[in-house]
Amino acid sequence: MNTKFNSVEKTSINVNNIKDVVSMKLFDRSFTLAQSAKSCVVCGKQAESFSCERAAIEFKMSAMCEPCQNEVFEPIDG
Image (cartoon, rainbow, N blue to C red):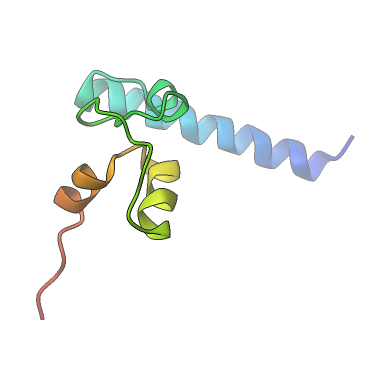
């Protein structure tokens, strides 16, 4: 049994549990269910296509569709 892998797996599960709790409080949607259904945790719309790799990677971390990502991560002027 690889203890190092088990530790990473447990940490990942714990992080996703935290994301579920926070997303339920903020958006009344489960992070885990939104991610597996390829829907946005914020607005509930489908999140299956992205204009760039950055947005696709961000979806894997946040379960937010690209329009919601663009609202949250506005460009910083200057």
